[in-house]
Amino acid sequence: MFTKDSIIGVVGCGAMGSGIAQVAATAGHKTIVYDSNAAALERARTQLEESLAKLVGKQKISAEKASEISKLIVFTGALADLKVSKLVIEAIVENIEVKQSVFRQLESVVTEHCVLASNTSSLSITSIASACSRPERVLGIHFFNPATLMPLVEIIPGIATDMVIANHCQALVNSFGKVTVMAKDTPGFIVNRVARPFYSEALRIYEEQLADMATIDWAMRELGGFKMGPFELMDLIGHDVNYIVTETVWKQFYYDPRFKPSLSQKRLLEAGFLGRKSGRGFYDYREGADQPKPLKDEALGKYILNRILCMLINEACDTLYLGIASATDIDLAMTKGVNYPKGLLAWADEIGLAQVLVSLNALYDEYGEDRYRACVKLKQLVKQGKLFY
Ligand code: NAI
Image (cartoon, rainbow, N blue to C red; front, side):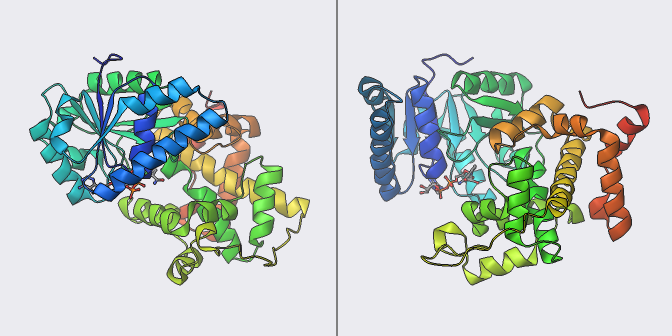
């Protein structure tokens, strides 16, 4: 369906659209980038040249390759220029009405063989596709930020998507050098769903004053092997982004208490303490500010790691149980999309599923909250003496 000559269209040249265009052009595809904002187009053009120059400087690519990539990307302010595309990836503002309207316009421009994809993180692909007269050619192709560096891409067929088209898109994105996983069209897809407890359970422990943030971060980094602790990571992502993702996933799951957002994080957002980018978040990044020191209490650290990890495993298990994705895709998604040290299901096998279930049941007994209910699949596997792999 796709060849090296297939032209890729990108709608929106913000953080994601520009990165996606660079990825497609680096793989040798002519790429046409459309944005309705002339200033954004100009900015993207400049940033592309800077990004390519940096890669040449670091000797990641040759000057010839950089010039080749640059020539393959065409920026335009006319949507009609996308008509030669074989695939159009939309990366505009995260708003369902605006996206539906753009998809309707796209259908009137492109050929009948063109595939239409959205890079949305939180909207329903099925709902975006419902605006189209041919929803079978619409799917989600979800890159991570920054698209040029993050290896993972989630492929999300909607209810009406033709699976043959979805499979061809997966092969195309694989040919870009990315690692792809297939996920059902459900809130947060794989990564943004399974990762929620990394933040929310850490926030819960913090709010209950069982440990301070520096100690929680230390435990996850030093004892768990995660690259960053939950609080440093939330500060890096920005609370405007991280809180909104949590709230959106929670609402879309009909307010399931397992996804409930945290008031402490909401207050930071209200105060404009967005994290690193605003100089203050959970931590204070202003010059000379005191940095809290972790307690480095081994027993407390193990409790923190075990509690957060078991909640993550439970979410991964539910994602498998509900057929959102395969076990290998869930593990790949978390190691390649958010750099977890191990796949969560493989990690669960290593710990012992009975042990994970004991920990979850202990939390459930202590709190009496539905949030801590163990996944049915986990209970079944323990009963049968089986593992995930
Ligand atoms: P952004 O705000 O950096 O860029 C959006 C671009 O779309 C802007 O240049 C804007 O001028 C353009 N635009 C808006 N409405 C338009 C329209 N009707 N027609 C043409 N162009 C239009 O946004 P960002 O961060 O690149 O996100 C884009 C999409 O990717 C969103 O759906 C977002 O949820 C998703 N996403 C974002 C990630 C992130 O970390 N920023 C990660 C993965 C997905």
